[in-house]
Image (cartoon, rainbow, N blue to C red; front, side, top):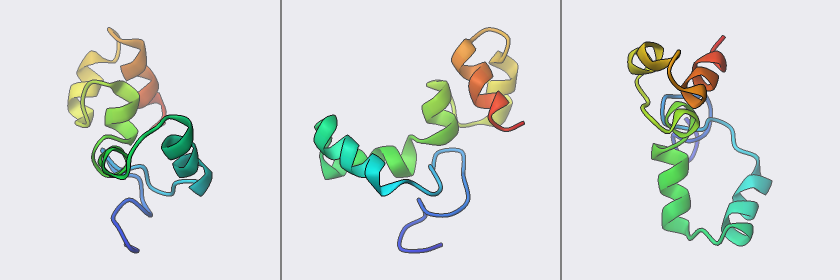
Length: 78
C-alpha cells in the first residue's frame, strides 16, 4: 500500500492504479469535489462501479445473466 489503499491491487470497491489524468478530468470536467472523488476512488470503484449493483462477487455471479453491466463486471475478472 502506498499513500492510500486506492493504489495497487484492484479490490472489490477500489480502483487500483489510477491515471492522474482521470483525477483531473473528474475534478474539472465532471465538477467533482475532493470528497466525492475520494468516496468514488476508495469506496465505489471497480466491481461496484462497473456493475452498479454490488461489490460482492457471489452476488454478481448470481445476477450475471440478468444484467449487462453485471456481466461486464464479472467478465473483467476473466
